[in-house]
Length: 313
Image 1 (cartoon, rainbow, N blue to C red):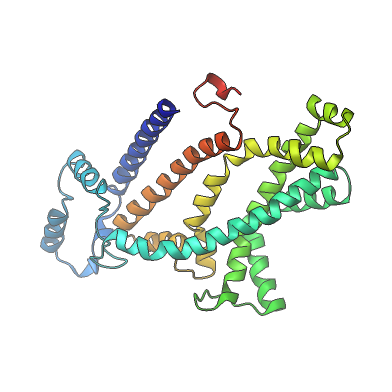
Image 2: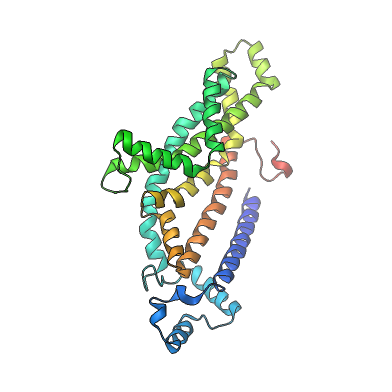
């Protein structure tokens, strides 16, 4: 296990280095306006002095080396146009708690509704609840997310009088964004759990359990659900972490001052240092989620070995 962990960490660090290098290099091709406030009012001499002070006149490998040297200490530079001369990490630290509040709540709701729905669909295969759940999943998968986000916003305000502008001191303004974040994951959890449980129901050990006299409920809860949940559980950490760092569209739609909305704002303001820091954080979270997923799968089912070829049981 330790050997596998070291290999995964090594690959993850290499992947992150490649992502950082690509993002860093591409941003150096962007217009330099993103490094200055009131760029149009500056003289050429002031611009060149600013570039020299920021080290942007150095060769690209030198800039990249200096960036990595600071990044390992958690220093991603300073914002230039979003909040002039404020450290990138200071801004991000203020935004993360807001996205985490919404993200964790939406994930809990997704699991509390999605998993039971998947179980109910599997147990009533071909019947009313299965057809109803399938219709819901097909709708969510087929319709662009932006469409049902707007429907939730429109009907939520017209029918229930819920506010569309996020206010951290008003709990009612949490409802629509959390529902918007949760609805896709509800369909995702229900779809895959139903599929895995139906697959498990066709296996020989289920027939043997029926022959031994176990009830359908006992078979589903003690055997089928456990085995069906194993392949699905590895995706849960990624969905949790990705939801916690914010939904770009939803946070913009409800004016939520979180991580997702921040990324939109800094792109609009062409704040290259902020964009760089946020992309790195989003990439890091995605990589960590994949690693945690593998280990969570082993915890749920100790028969799985990550060190054997093919992840043999």
